[in-house]
Amino acid sequence: MRKYKVLIEDAFALDNPAGIGYYTNGLYKSFEKNSDFLLCKIPEKKILHRIPNKFFKKIAYIFWLNTFFLLWLSVKKIDVVHFTNYLIPFIRLKGCKYVVTIHDLWDDKNLLPKFYGAYIKFVIRHSLKRAHTVLTVSNAIREQILREFSISDDKVVTVYEGYEANIVINPVAFPQHPSGYILFVGTQSKQKNIETLLRAFSDASSTYQGNLVLIGKKGDSTEWIDNFINESQLSSRIFNMGYCSRNVVCDYMSSTSLFVFPSFYEGFGIGLLEAMSYNLRILASDIPTTKEIAGQSIHYFSPVDSYESLAREIISLTLENKDKDADTRSQRYDAILSKLNWENSADLHMREYFRNF
Image (cartoon, rainbow, N blue to C red; front, side):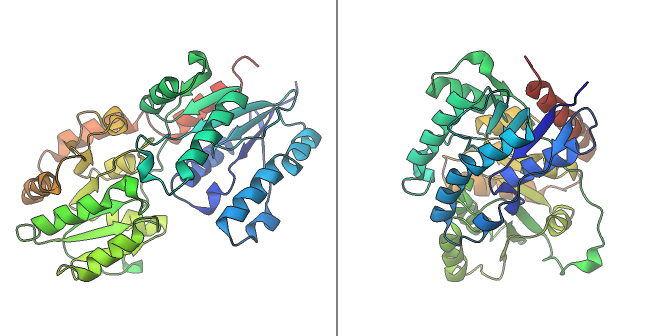
């Protein structure tokens, strides 16, 4: 019997090891171990990578996706294509199943750069129409899709992401940590609500004597963050590390006293699972996806309340012994992590790839 050919098309997500890139890479590595189907190599985009301007690069990619990529699919006789980064071709190829993952929709379009909200809505509407199967990474996002778009209920399926188990590293290979710190990991964008975290840390700083470490690639909040730090009297206690390799992130995860996840909006929130894998105390915003993933295993605050409320939570948790309830916390986290791993996620993805085949 002929083995089905499966391809994952990521646009440029793998260039960014966070977010969608992390998702794509986790799936691809899990599928490489599978012998039930042929996993085709992601097509190279050497010419597209040479385009420095992001806007023109996106335009060129859309052209490539609807011309050369379609021709390549036809020649290679691909059975299933999983588009992990929203965009799919305008034309459906006969005999080829299109699967697309919609990671999020953004409740507040003001959190997006100008004009990007309209672009995203158009792209998502097109993808929902052309795809045979639509995957989402949480039930909260699935319900939002069904509310905002006219689409069949059984066409949209929730498949949770997995997490990569923590890495054991040699701490000598990394710079000395500041002594005692709160940790944030995520892109420096408005939706991550770093502004509230910084103001809360400033408010709590006279009681909490530790530091704040921010890790994540630059985004539309980076300039504001840098200005706040430079103008603050706490510049010696706030460390904006920018993008760091996964090994370095794991190093900081292994030593922090508190992991803060203050987002206004998330599609899934992989950072929660990584923090759980280190049995960290977690303080997160009480948004639907966070509560769906973490349940009652972590501490919450409202992201729409004043920063003073977050400051009070930071003080309360950091004054506690970090080992308090560690065993109970570990049991709760293990129950979540045992279900949300890449092996299980890959199996569920495959089920959707070949459903109704």
